Image (cartoon, rainbow, N blue to C red):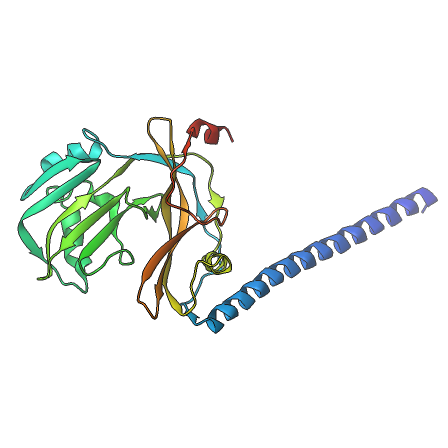
Length: 280
């Protein structure tokens, strides 16, 4: 074996050794970062319990979502046009909202209202475009049963895509209001969101969860981020919505957090050009 060949053997041996060492360090660093994040979350969750904040099991896995655009169905839009086929009710369309009053109230089981209402919304002569909606027990109350429109597999969590069934004291549905999000388009490729646990930890660290309270639920859906100057469209993003009840006063609040960048979402609408999002 000549000297030149021996040199090459040693070179590749040392190169392989360096790659193995570098890979080990990289894996170790990732493990340390993950452990640090997990450890910090555990510390915060313990602080929450010390502050008498109760909550259920929180998922730590990341999910995915999109930047979407769409607009509330207007007069002569999809919802208004589909409403002409409705029977057994008086309807009128105003301010992007369809309002219905049933000719005869519909009896429901208040504990399982979706059993009867699921049949109703899939009847095109009873509810327009009902196949696009799903019962949402988290948003519903004893007096208002809410079905949320599904877009890209998730609920529209604000009022832009909802059916709100009115329930009287006799557990009868007397009518409903309905909004519909149409023309939905994906603006950006699918991206990863923060986890449910991360959302709760972030809310607590930013003083959004009061002491002596209970987190009733935390759900991921789409909420309006901003309005646009392009065909009156709005931009929607994945949003963690948490409902929090203060134990002493009984006050209930819902707080939304941007599932992409962890910012607290306010009820302030900003105008922007969606073409800028498409170029990114």
